[in-house]
Length: 169
Image (cartoon, rainbow, N blue to C red; front, side):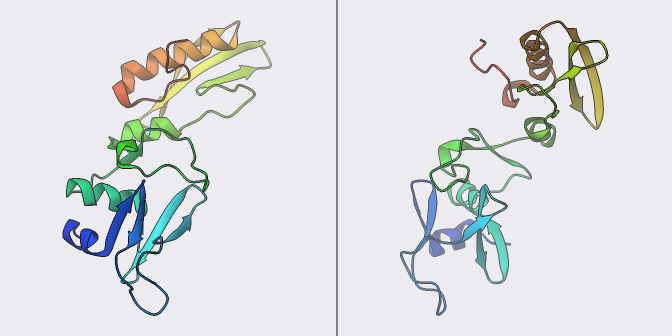
């Protein structure tokens, strides 16, 4: 496992990105951006035949430890098409909260946790925790269902939950 000291020796942090401090082998030159794209929205860095996610190395560099789960506070993508790895955008997170951010009920709705029932022509709100789905109710309009989801998400996942209306719309 790579250490904080080794990360600081190898990399320089600039604007949420890591750059090699010095040349490492024939293909890697000092001052160049370290790594390449991984899974479309993440950046990976290979060192000693091990791949590390850039955001995890950045967190380790600044904090000296690695949480089991690490969250990007904002999921907005940078000009490179990846999530921002600025240290201000990274936070440790519990597994359940991280799953809640990514568990999205896909359907006709544009809101998380909301789908349309064609049989009763109403919007259904539900949320998942510990591999169990909780039915939150049926609603005549999509936004009411989304608000019910937000209320349940705050109760179940706390401050790190994903909300459809973060500003309380």
